[in-house]
Each structure stands twice: as structure tokens, then as C-alpha cells.
Image 1 (cartoon, rainbow, N blue to C red):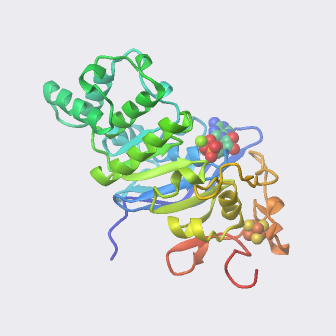
Image 2 (cartoon, rainbow, N blue to C red):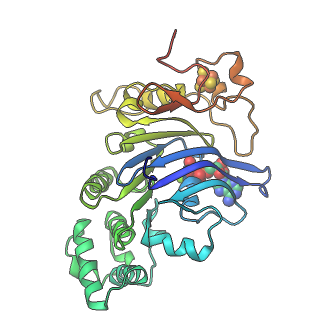
Image 3 (cartoon, rainbow, N blue to C red):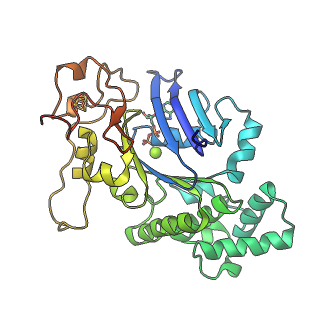
Length: 328
Ligand SMILES: Nc1ncnc2c1ncn2[C@@H]1O[C@H](COP(=O)(O)OP(=O)(O)O)[C@@H](O)[C@H]1O
Ligand code: SF4
Ligand SMILES: [Mg+2]
């Protein structure tokens, strides 16, 4: 029997029935993350990436209805009490969001935030927690760690703030780190440094990583597997190298074509994906990508394609006419 994966999400739904019109943000989402592994979750703005990130640690907005199953190390989180979810946050699930300014507490020093987070979850005396806080700041490559302990978030640059946030997320030793667009608010060079840090931390700490981005280039090369989300559904998933080199879903192929590559000149024109995803609350019959899909055939507008196995590597695709299988 296979050991239970660290994270197993099944038939996950997130809906906002009170919104006008009512919104289905996620439907039938499946995602598995093995201990110490990394998954890249990609999709355009509005695809539902953040709702997935927030659903795991129990941080969805009031009015959100969660359905299906989220198991962390065998423990069901859907329906868990607020108290239980709060205890898991920090201790077992660390998270880093796009805006480090909003995620840090402005009136507490970096040191206080690190030490309080650690002591809330692990039995550390104050002096030992301070030593641990310095070690964690050094691990995320914050220079001058001892001095930084006494500083407030507003005294730090955007890149340093994001490193401090990563240190807070990791200090209690969680087995899962969720990073939702962690570099979107940063300039390109600072972002590259933060992404290199994720790769290094993963190797050093063995923390499983769910890395979320609208940009395929951000997750490429950093994740073992890629999940592609479109209009609240997973449309393709598989080993990262395979999804990138030979995408099966026409949306993944379009996303890859619209992603700058290192081996082509930077001034080469980028293919944009024509059209737009369904509006929030729009009801779609059949495949949500059909209005934008160059391969659409008759069943595409009437039948919702199901996520089914493709190839032999555990890849899956939800498409009536996937690329690479059978006649073009
Ligand atoms: N509080 C809310 N009420 C109603 N709809 C919401 C709410 N929060 C998010 N949504 C909708 O859920 C969908 C997914 O949003 P989100 O997960 O933020 O997308 P992404 O992170 O991929 O850009 C969007 O259509 C968004 O409008
Ligand atoms: S199901 Fe049809 S419309 Fe949807 S992506 Fe596949 S070919 Fe295109
Ligand atoms: Mg988002």
C-alpha cells in the first residue's frame, strides 16, 4: 500500500453563493503533493489559484463554501475547527503571499515576529528562540541578521521583507510551504534571488512546496510537477519537464508559447492568448477554453472534458482533443 501523501486534495470546490452573480471559484480540483516534493500551480489571473492556496490553511473569505476533501498527512482539513486550523498554520503549513508588507505586523520588530511564531508552536525558551531566529534569518540570506531582529518591517526593502516573511513561514519547521505569487510584487533581480532561495531551501530543509504563479517561467525548473488551472479546474497535470516540453492541453500549449524562453532572443514577439477566460459567475457548458481554442470540435461546447490519465508518467489532461495523441 502507498504511504499517504503529505497533501491530498480531492474533488475540491470553492463557491461564493452569496455573490451577485454567484461565483464558482474552484470545482473538482485534485492535487497530490508528496512529502518533500514541489508542485507548481499555474494559470491566468482569476483561475482560482489563490482560492486553492487559502482553502488549505482555512483562510477563505467569509461567505466561501468549501466542499470536497483536503487531507494533510491523513488529517481531514475540510470541516476542521478554526482552532485546529489555526494550530496547523505556522506549525505544519507555512505560507508566503504576494505582498510582504500586508503580511507582516507593522508595529512588531522582525525579531519579535520570528520569536513569537516559533514559541507559539514549539517549546523554546526565549534565549534559545532568539538564537533560532538569527539562524533562520541567515538561512534565508538576510544580511546582518542580529541587527535586523530589532528592525520594523517598514525599515526593510521589499526583497528583505519577503525574505523575513519566508523566515517566519519556516521557523517552526512546517512540512508544507505554500507560496502564492511570492515574487510578483518584486523587481526582476530581487525576484530571481527569492526564487533561487526557494530551490535552495527545498533542498536543505525537505519542506514540500506549493509554488503558485501566473507565470509558467517562474515554476519551470523549480518544481517536480506542474498543475495547470483554467477557470477553476485543473486542465493538465504531470511531471514538469513533460508538461513544459510536450503540453497536451491547448491552453497549456498557449501558455507555454506566451512565456519568454531563455534560449530565444528577448525581442522575439510573444504570442498572446487571444480572448479571455469566462467572467466570474459565468456558467459554462462544455469546455471553458472552447471560445479561445484553435482545436475545438463539436463536443467541446456541450460536454465538460474530464481529467483523465495520459501517457505512462502519471500525467493527466482534461481535453476532448489533446495535443500529441492521435491525428493532429
Ligand atoms: N470573496 C469573493 N467573493 C466572490 N468571488 C470571489 C471572492 N474571492 C475570489 N472570488 C472569485 O474567485 C475567482 C478566483 O479568484 P482567485 O483565486 O483570486 O484567482 P487567481 O489567484 O488565480 O488570480 C475569481 O473569479 C474571483 O473573482
Ligand atoms: S476540450 Fe476542446 S475546446 Fe477544450 S481544450 Fe480540448 S480541444 Fe480545446
Ligand atoms: Mg491570486
